[in-house]
Length: 196
Image (cartoon, rainbow, N blue to C red):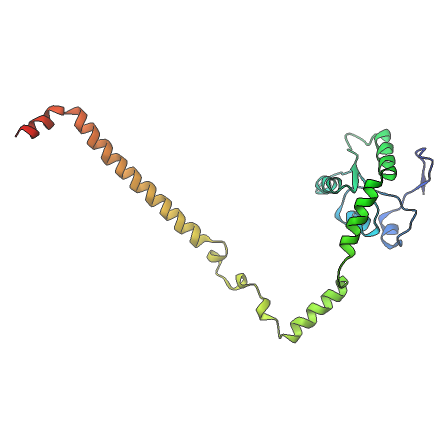
């Protein structure tokens, strides 16, 4: 399906299903996407910058993240997408090499791994088998009681200390207040006591 926005180039729209299995092609200049995580991963994997039109959920946050990394331009979907805004965003992403350079750098970083995901999963599965369950890698928190895991014992201790200090301060303040008030109310009693 072709879409013409008078960009002097032909734009080809693909559904997600077509895109997932399409090999990386040098003619792909950008993705226009809603900003979902899968779209972001696909674009970075292919080294293609984005024009993002977020709709709901985490898409707005993902779009801002992509824009902060220099790999996307956001087009807001106010009541509806403005045709001129979309056209300007597409032209900016295609013509400004900053977007392509940023996504190429991210692609190199993402693909720079010693093993593929499947190889990593196989290696760790074999590791656990070799070490009979790999109990040395088990998180100690898995065996902790509930109150220790959530630090309820520590919170309880500090709460007790704070309330004890507050209680002691209140009692001390009351005693000092009574002493000061009794001194100012009956200064003659104090003088009489001193004379006797």
